[in-house]
Length: 249
Picture 1 (tube, rainbow, N blue to C red):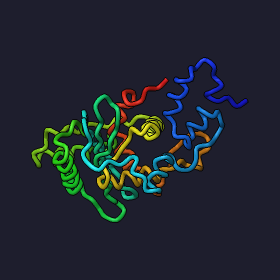
Picture 2 (cartoon, rainbow, N blue to C red; picture 1 turned 60 degrees about the vertical axis):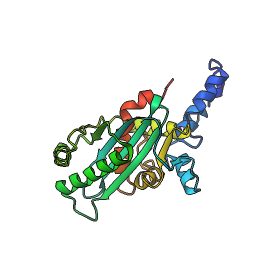
Picture 3 (tube, rainbow, N blue to C red; picture 1 turned 90 degrees about the vertical axis):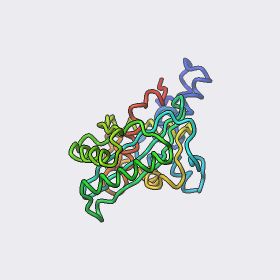
């Protein structure tokens, strides 16, 4: 029997509307949780955002500095020869009302060999760019699987007089929890990006897809055909704040 959210008589009408507002009407969670359909995860993950970008909509774009930023967090994901390194800077507004991607950079490791010293130089340039634009950085969360590269970033920061910038291990929570959180932020128009500063991240969000070969569980495709590096570095910046950004239940 198919049961929808609106079949539950114990949920008041205003609460139903509030719950529904957290979903992209085209997402698998909307079809499952609101419409009560049994459906396999496939296709674009962030279709609402991708549709907006493809039609030229500026609904998620900001043209200047983010306002009332209480935190600026950087995320770093390290790629191998089949992917790339990624840096992302994210601002969280006061009261955890919005998440704003301030800048992103993806370095293709398939076409160029990047040694640790070069990577450190590129990272310091990215850090300096964010500081010049926004005045501060709270913390950097980097992929904990690469401790040697993390140590290299810290050494590069010290050489550039930026040793006060903390570089810590990313929490690396459940990927689907991170995906679901971004889907909610997009649906509620609480995610934005600075236009012209986040091209790699915008492209990554628009092209992220479900793994159609895995029918058993929801799994993001990670076979080198889309930029998962940028998705990971971005998600590292807000994963610790998901419970504050998203009110479940």
